[in-house]
Image (cartoon, rainbow over all chains, first blue to last red; front, side, top):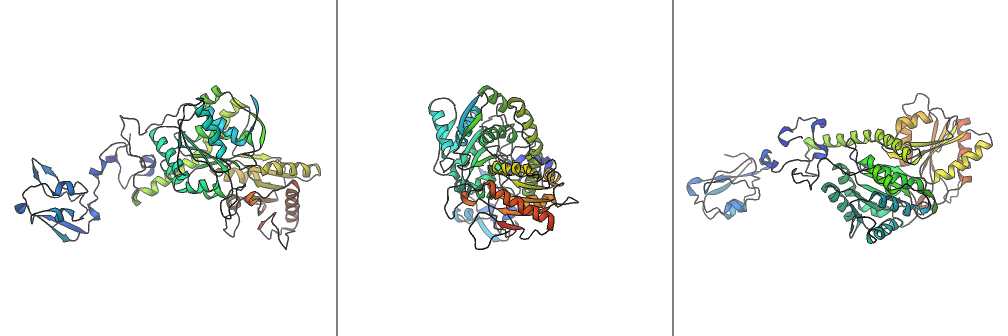
Length: 102
Length: 396
């Protein structure tokens, strides 16, 4: 069975799955979709109270949480929509122009 | 078993013998009867098919796609604007490599609105990635539907199949027919056993994901290769089918082509009328012949070129307009196929029979008369013309 991790943009047609079928769940984790971003959120850890409001609002699950603390953005999946900045009650998130994380 | 059935009854009976898992059903003239007959089989408990009535053909094909992806053998029937409404889904079925079987009862597309026969509906879908097999009569409609299943489901093919018959002419006319035993049909089509399907719980599956530019073309190449592979599979299945039925099928039928100078390339029920004209001309000592295209997708280009190589003049008869201003779809394929021959026959295109306009034996005799003139003079103009319509000027 062909696994998603074994397929990339150099794979010949003979080695791809028929019709692009995917035979396992959660394969989006492996794909860098952060390149679509035109604006980038910046996380100010010192201002964050870890209220966790931003986490469920993120449409791309791009805010990792570990041991009750939110970590810095997962820029591989963040699309730069800015919803997190909007819902953050503290000055802990600011959006900056451009797709590259500072 | 001998019987007398209309084309629609014959296809519904084939479906009953196959006993598919799912039918996506929506009525449209002249295919309505197929779903009607099949609904009776369902109601009588003669099949255990999930009969899903929906609100449009867009939905009936969507039902088939979802069911087939889930691992269920699915069938469908439609005509004309119904097929046009499925258009988006036809491509989805083919690109997801789901071997759905669709009985297409050919009918002219609107507009102007018309319920009678021509091939404008299925010709519009000729580039959708579906295998297309055309029937001349009820027997072929029945046989083709049964053969379609092992063709489409073969792992090297995995493409949906459209079996086509002429609306009303074939679908509603009752003819003698030879039916196979249900047990024999069941064994012939076997069980649908795809390697991957949505209901296989130990094997999570995503079907039809978004395909970016880095992958789309590779998947289209896969489809194109599958269509090429279908040619051998169609012949293989025909050979197996001959063993159970005694009836022989190829990619096309050659009628009195062995030494033919003048030939027709044609599809569907008109071929029967054309064969009568060929017989009459043969009696008069004219070396006439006819090629009936059975499989239009994949198009048997190389094989057709070999068959036509020895002829002097050929008329390709299109029962649909392509509005290319350069001839109909069957002509485009045939002319392209002949290009690689060192010695080519003269080739003309005649568009006839649109919206159910009748064609008679005498009309074919006229065509052969023109071909005889072309073989003598070499003057093929006009290359592309219409026949059987009212006009102030007629083509000699």
